[in-house]
Amino acid sequence: MPIGGPTGGHVLRGAIRGQRRRVVSASLLGMTHQACEALVPVVIGAAIDTAVATGSTPALVRWLLVLGVLFLVLSTCYRTSARIAEGAGEHAAHRLRLELGARVLDPRGGADANRLPGALTSIATNDARRVGSVATVLPYGCAAIAALVVSAVALLRISVPLGLLVLLGIPPLLWLGHRISRPLERRSEAEQESAAHASGVAADLVSGLRVLKGMGAESAAVARYRTTSQDSLAAALRAARSRAGHEGALLALTGVFIAVIGITGAYLAMRGSISVGDLVAAVGLAQFLLGPFQLLAYANAEFAQARASARRIAEVLASPAAVDGGERAPDGTAAGHVRLRDVRLGSLRGVDLDLPAGSLTGVVTRDPAVAHDLLLALARETDPADGRVELDGVPLTELDPDRLRRSVLVAPHDADLFESSLLENVRAGADGTGTPAVDAALSASTADEVALLLPDGADTVLAERGRSLSGGQRQRVALARALAADRTVLVLHDPTTAVDTVTESRIAARLRDVRQGRTTVLITTSPALLAVTDRVVVLDGGTVAAEGAHTALVAGDETYRAAVLG
Image (spheres, rainbow, N blue to C red):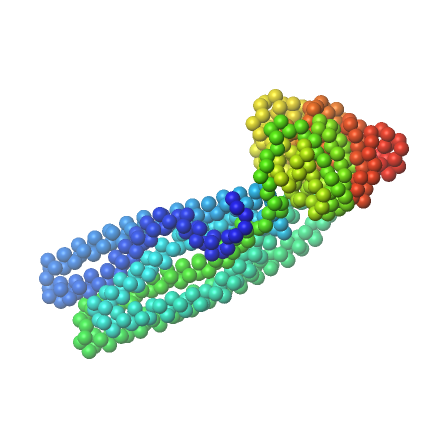
């Protein structure tokens, strides 16, 4: 999907446009329901004048049959309209969630910039639901307007002054309702921002719960969340007060308007300008009008909140891409030769690095920021400010990010596991490769030994983010997933930091065999992994400080020896 452009108005219109048929059908049925509701007091008034006042039993039976048909039609239309309208809202929200998911997962990135995962989740759930609700609310609004029009026509038939009073009074009431909803819209937006931030902080704290416990920082974390939650509560209360004030003001205006209609009708009846039946019909219509006005107040409040949510959704959909999209695809028989030419990105200060096709290269750095920025450059999550990264002589900026990642896989240190079986987690990276590749990956990472310790073996369902496994077990499964992908170029960042030394040595030996003939980069300080590499490159101060065989660097480079063995 194209990135950039949508506004809150586009999002709202898109939600309705995507459900046009359902919205139109629900609106027509709702209008029929409300028109029949409006006709009920008119029919009762006619029955009083033509049947009750005259004592005509046949006329009374006829009017009762008419009333029965009206109630049958209005009840059927109401149930059907409500079902269709609710379905339209759910479908609209679902479509928005798909669009947000596609934007967040877009290979060009950028949607998650300065947004916590919990905040994005809140936008994709609460805000999408509120915007989707416009497809539900619109038919109710149309039905309410139809009720007002039918009531005005009926009152015109009874008395021209009564009809004109309704026709001339409705537009100012609708305008005032729109003006009153402005503060609610502003406060709803602030409430949603605060709620999303609170959700993001909560998700952030839960994901780092073990680390916080290990540091003894639970009290600080609880204090942080309490402050955030209190801010969210204060914003929610302000929005609730605004909504209560909005609805109260509209009900007060509506009450005054209905009272004026009733008083006018009573005055006309006292003067003999309208009959008793007409008076009953006028009073009944005046009372009935409370329902449509309440529907309009509800619709107005929902639209106000939906507009605030639509702006938040539009901000995500319009987020600028982290990288400019290229259009070329890597050669299907790509050799996997990676070259960094004077790359400057964050902590990288003019890095020149040649990674020959089929090589197994170790990269050592004591600065986590350097490792992080190198991963960003190789994964093309961020393009260098200067210099360029090439794959088989082609700059990565010319390659489509999605197609590039089918040839180059960068596996970060903190890779998460899915809430599915161990085997499905590994197969998630296999990209259509057969069982032999998965089996080889399980063996090379020793994840097959992890499976043997689980109740149902490789079919055991893991907890969210693999929390049912130890840190070392999670790393071995994540490594198996990366190996099973069988990419031409594989970059691994500290894949064995939580694994015991004996297992790490076995992984190192098997890793070389399973990646034979394909380009592999190990960003690590593990002596076991570095010992099986063809060459080691040392990055210090954001530049290449040394390179050579692991044994030679251990023997002749004190800085390297301190980083790896110290």
